Image 1 (spheres, rainbow, N blue to C red):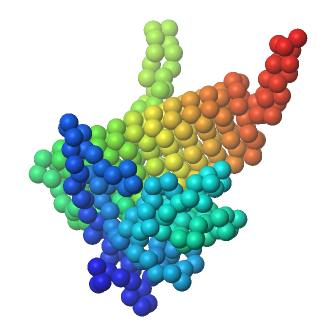
Image 2: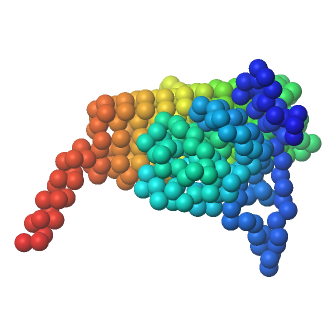
Length: 376
């Protein structure tokens, strides 16, 4: 372990780079009646999550974006405030849990400036402006994303003309189409299909049994298992003889750092591309129709349905099971409540709920008035 202690002049990237692929699994759990039993203290089940460490507290603080403490401590892992031991780190995400903080045995705790005086004497306070963000970074230090194992599995099918970077991993029974391009350090999961001509930028991860067609993906795009990207949209004309399918001649663009949840579907455009902006996160079971354009850093929760040609600006949040009618525009930094029905333009910064979606204050005022009338 001594060789992995940070050396003079090392940056966090230097240290993390040396630790990243040394993460190990330790499936040494007891088994009772066929069910593995592990300590309730540990965070990150060792059967499923590789881990690194222990790490010096100075490195943990650096990863969290905190000032390096004077105390020396080797931190073995993560735990909740209630269960943490003196060699573990925890955090206070909810100020209402301050009583739990005051009783914690954690060796170190991530806290806001307002809460640092409530940390017990046996714990080191790591002060940060955003404890949740810092905790996320520390969790990634102890449980980094598994490394890609370069190579093409013997059961994978790779078409002639496909270009696969030698650092990419193609798992069992994956299919790579003609003229597809798989960038450096990409991982294509078992049974996934990358269709003809698809381009994946560096560090993309395609989950098992996902399919990607008619699409260009940027860097660090993560498509979760079972997602469908680039299939034909729900486009047709109605004639006297019935429906006539309209050719869908566009594609899909997923910009850098987009995540697409499990079993989500994103239709390709009909005349232009369907675009998902950089940094946007899409939950499981979301339907995005043809020609939709979603801005940067949006968050779309599960079971949302977005109709064709909708335009969603940057930093929009849409709650679960909301629906958006076709050709609607949603302004930047607006919020759409769960199960809302958006049928008209939403202004920038607006907060709307209900169906049809209206200003949240207006809806809640009406609900309060109805309650008063009901009591008479």
